Length: 501
Image 1 (spheres, rainbow, N blue to C red):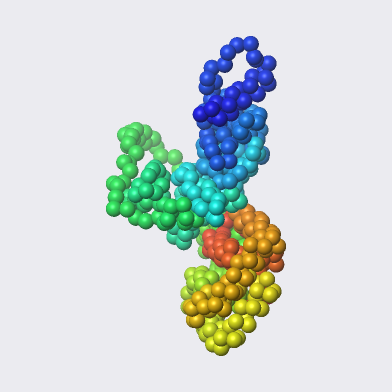
Image 2 (image 1 turned 180 degrees about the horizontal axis):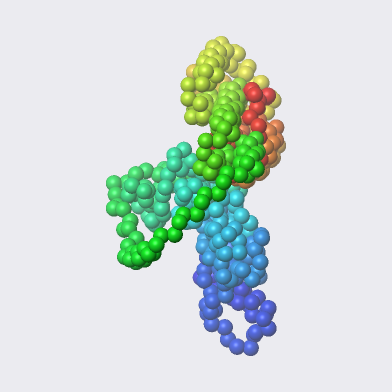
């Protein structure tokens, strides 16, 4: 409480000095004060004073919060709500008529500067803060439920760390429409409750509190009735018909120039991959100029463009699966093949790749049937600093031969190399690139995301977090190609085959 008072008093002094007011006693708390969030671990306190957001850190001076793209005069009229914190970062929701057409956006903030988390708009709710223990450190995570404006309120459950936010499988893998109900403690865990369209209530929590680095959502036994319908208002009686009905206006004659311009617009939208616009223009064209011979060829061209996109994306996913398999990551390889199945069920090339990967997995198993070959492979991985590969090989070795003296000696050597400063530096560099890649994913800049993951691979080959980020990138690209936005942005053309190692 003493720290809290010091923080608030500092803000009052700063505001008072700025307006030349120090002659009269201040109310405590001052008028116009409203708390937003307080992070005791990082000692940051965010609140509003006369509508302006402020941040205080420890016993230092408080500073007004600036939001990129927002004029200071608009801050006092905005709706600002807390969305939690993670490490030095905190998140807010912001809504104001002069910003993003009055739609609610999520802000990612560090110190006194905030910017949009991504380009997505939609109502957001804070589900609560959670903790994850890593080594001797306890890290904060925050969970956010966002209802996407562009997808009729489809839910997006975000799990935010100190560097990025990622969508959790509960909404990423299924189309869900959820509403936040409340949070609290249940069975010794922090739980957030969500309601879906059917009335079923989901309970979302860490599978193991303080350990699991994500939320898992399960249907509870609670089912609620539908929301009450909006009250109906009696319709006004229709006006009496006119004594003599006016003759209908003649329909405008079809204009050849307008029809040609519409056809050209549809063709440009198809060429740009903007299928949503092409669909809208095509519906307008067939309604206004029904029976025109210009539309069937364009409809065929649109269908073929969509099929080409699906086939290209399927081949890209197959290439990703082969790349994972070459690295010995068969779990992620199968996940990519399953994504390929969603794009084009029954595609022959997917079945062929699955068979080839199965053969590769068998061959890798047979390669180390001889114990000396197995030990030599582990030693080579340790000597070349391929520590994550050595870790996987040691796990296989333990399953086959047990944790004997040879295993313990190599495991000790691996632990020594992992704790050394050069390896820690490489892992830190890789994590920096992974964070940058996830930020690029959030704004659909997939080429930039891929570049950062390549750099992460060079820094720490085989690092498991890189594989997970690559899998998330592949899923994100697949999702965008299945449901393309109005503007295609930075979607890369799908490569014809697997990536080079």
